Amino acid sequence: MAPHNNIVLFDYPFSPYAKRVAWYLTLRGIEYAQCVQPVTLPREDLNALGVKYRRIPLLSIGRNIYCDTRLILEKLEQRFPSGSLGACQPEQRALEKLLQIWTIDGGVFSRAAQALPPEMPLLNDPKWVKDREDYMGRSWAKEDVAKGRPEALAHLRGAFDLLESTLLADGRDWVLGTEKPSLADIEAIWPFHWLSGLEGALPPSLFGKEEFPKVYGWIDRFSSALKAAKASAPNVISLKGAEAIQFVTQAELAEPEGDVDAKDPLGLKKGQDVESWPTDSGFNHRDRGQLVTLTQHEVVLKTQAKVGHKDIRIHHPRTNFRIRPPVWYKPHWPSIQD
Image (cartoon, rainbow, N blue to C red; front, side, top):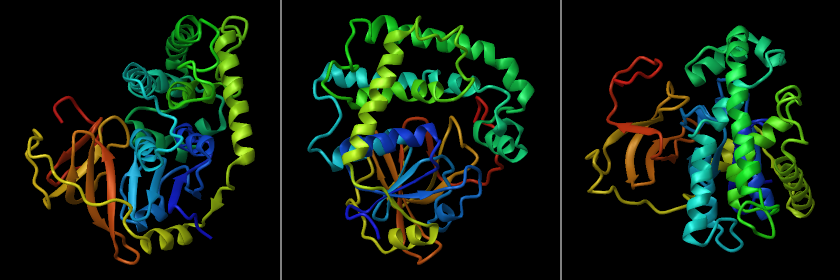
């Protein structure tokens, strides 16, 4: 059985990034299927679809595969406009975007990851540690995590204080003063919600509910809203890897082919072979294909599934992604010169 709207979410359940998308779908009551992926590489289901991008989650709609939660949420807003969670007013849209930048690019999540308690079982799993080092480009040895943790906690206290003393200071329930959670809440809450649920991540002496009552109240309200939404939302359809591959490859394309911006500074041409990859994490894994769309916000490559040999369209955002004609390269950690 597959969803009528052709949506498949490729994730693993405790990924904080994947929760951003799952929460959105739940709050909207949008039907979707889930194909659970391994926590570490390899991910053979995605490889069979011709995808090299290594981050989680990915979301397919038909034979279009969307990478990066920023682009995924944007596409869902566009595809299901009735009842969307995004802001309407320009100043609210700006705050929504700034919260996204703050949590993803502004250091909040990277510090949250550095705040993991060294005694976590995963930090004692050599396979997971090696995979994280490939993903992030830095050491994940337990002793190095322990060294960096005090600085990360100091940064996070500042983030908690910013929420407590500004956005939530007037006692509002939701970031934009709405009656229910909005996209701005999702953009802001996810690293704090994640950390609050990890035993030992937030020392009570530094992150007590007495010091940050509004932040914890917001997290509790959000959890309650999710629980209520889940009770009335369609059940998530579970697909095995082979089922998801068959479903995607036999589907139609979800959106028409776009154009390549003639004004784009990269000077790339439609139909040109290019490769595209993230520059902030997961940068050792590059998607390659024919350039079919290039805008200020998105790049789309046409590639081919290894199973079924159908054309697949892989979508990346422009933010923190690099696009160029293929060159021979050796996977490495990026430098300023790269």
